Image (cartoon, rainbow, N blue to C red; front, side, top):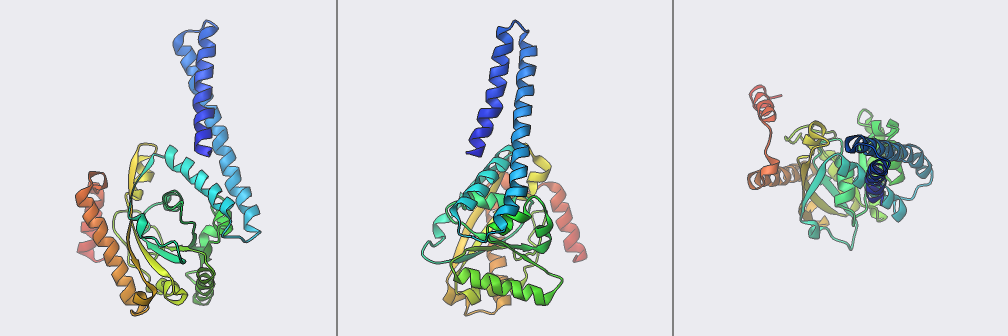
Length: 294
């Protein structure tokens, strides 16, 4: 709806002002400039409104905890769709049919760029979920409130006791029927290479007796450099691991397995799809990392 409204207000202003100026006798290029100006003004106002909704609406919704609210997920999904479209993000999605609908699940995925959360809210629109994120996001005026409103929890990585408390809360939420997404790298890789996974995060899926969804993401690290040019992002549900299977393994073994599955799937996808080709500057960085070991 918000995306459709941006088209109506933006292009509607452009066309209306253009035709109006032509009918008033203005030269076509002057009329076109007026139309473009109208588009910019209408679009800017809509962007400001969305920012205000994220800041003040998020804070208001976060005061009343209800992570299963359809309205909250609809709202963030609409905002995410608007942001992704105008920043040039397009999606290539595979494997959604592997996600079960009969019981809660925990998604483990790699984390490449600043728009990943918005990408997942659109791609996984039929699978509402909350997120486990680093606690610094709670102080972010744009996403802190709305993340909490959706049931998200901030993890303090500098305090083991607080981190353990948060993990226990997430486990309870998953048991109560709230789906969760976890980024086991702990931060954005800001590039095509996976960072090491934090094995402790896999206790959530194990203790909650939930299905573990292995999700691969690629291409989102390019968005920051390319926007508003088109960037195609690859998202694939690689596997769904049962509670019985994941509880038969130690957390570090499970971490290594999921890391391997995501890494192998992305490597295969890059061979298959040209839009996932890694820019040369990142290949050079990887070579330097391999040579130095850091």
